[in-house]
Length: 194
Image 1 (spheres, rainbow, N blue to C red):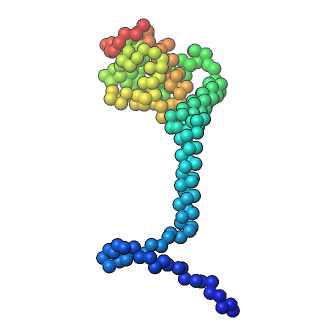
Image 2 (tube, rainbow, N blue to C red; image 1 turned 90 degrees about the vertical axis):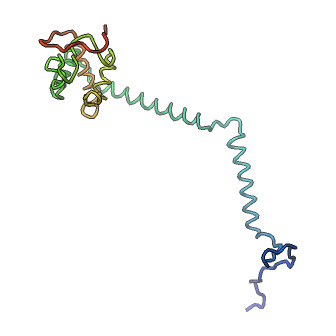
């Protein structure tokens, strides 16, 4: 065995600071080299990061531009999905759409509130006159069918019907019921639509 002792105890300076706290005297020992090195590396990295993130002129990594990029990517993906859905949707004639809409009107028990011929009753409004409560367009009608009107007792049908089925029901209402003359129509409600 070697007489050299590789495990030398750490050398401390005997310099004692002039101040004394509760009988504890502080020695003036330097920090270990690895802590000093770690501190310098951290400071260097933070300076590089700060310049790269905030100071680099071509860098556009702020929250607003990232949001705009992700929104544009989402809208592009949505447009592709909607285009694919329109291509896969069968092209029906107006009469076929109205027939399917009538079948869905009966199947989903719309008659319970709006009457067998759309004349309305104590619960639902008259669908045959030219007065409407929630807008006059096909989109407004589809929105009401899909989302319902819970305050008036109308069930939302978006979980029970697909978008094209909702469109069929709206077409049935607009092309068959509006303008018809049922036996006992409910009094007009809402705004007159042309």
